[in-house]
Length: 446
DNA sequence: TCTGGGGTCCTAGGACCC
DNA sequence: TCTGGGGTCCTAGGACCC
Image (tube, rainbow, N blue to C red; front, side, top):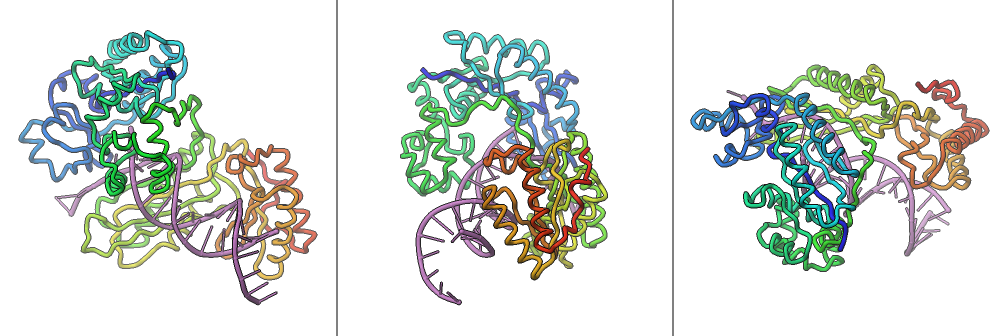
């Protein structure tokens, strides 16, 4: 039999956290609201029983909340982050391998617990509850997708005592028979519609589907899902946290924004938040996306979604440099006459500041560019395509060495990249086009 | 008047290369 | 200059998750 893994999921996490510190909330309907108190992002079981939906806008439900005596809390992310760390700490102490999947979920490797997986996880569940006050549910199965299924049913069926094992095909079949397509992890409305159109109307039908067929008509994601439902693991346990790829800062506006100045001010504050986050994590970015959207809830207003990415000559987490780039982005996407509802910035292509790669070789259009293009060909021949790439930056063209992370499939080491960089500079100079970008050798990485 | 914020992965399609 | 196939890279956008 395949190794088992467990999914531990905190019940109604944010609502449970509030209860830990306010015992009077126990047994009563509790909801937690999003940042601007805009909509519901967590509900206690009692609140769910009242029919309050996830994401329900507060302003449309105020009356209901009042009538039913629902206790409404603003979110307190530092509290939730702290509680999460305590829960994860306990899980890590009780099982050797785990993947922290989100603030309130973790996958645990149960290899080595043969024959006592369920008993062990009941023990874990009791310990977490006793030491933190947070109730959790546990699903145990051979694959992540089935563990999600088990977890969902463990939450729903009181008789399970919060732990459900789906180790064999018979129990898996029985479980899947009770679910809708959209109960599966990774299937939401659109995908479910597509599957139904293909004649696949239930989780059991999906399990029985031909993997190649669903890949052809949907995607490789669904193909994997079919195999996972059959108990064949396609999604491994990622015990080492992957490096973050993007950092975003965005907000909805309390009232529509109609002046460019206002949008610029908002973007400036997002940039400073994002830059702060990056510096805290010792990261730098080499491209910033700016976006701004109209109000999608007002179909009679003109709809607009503007987005523009600005490539930076040097990877940085410096607020003023990022701001300059972002304001350039605002200039590109600004449309007068739009009532903007939301905007934000996304810092892409994150790299550790200590390993940040310096160096872009700016080139003008025209003959110089031709010369650099042939230099690029030469580099591609020498080092393989993709090592040296070409990026548009405003009206000029920029040469950039791709980050080690982006080009990991070329398995190139840092020393070799330096060699490529020097080669590129030598070539561009030989081609009669002095590099006008910052001199990479002068650039001090922090 | 009031409807979250922060992520990931995948695909399609165009540009460009050999 | 044209032809075509095979390939990479980039971006936008869709879909999903918590």
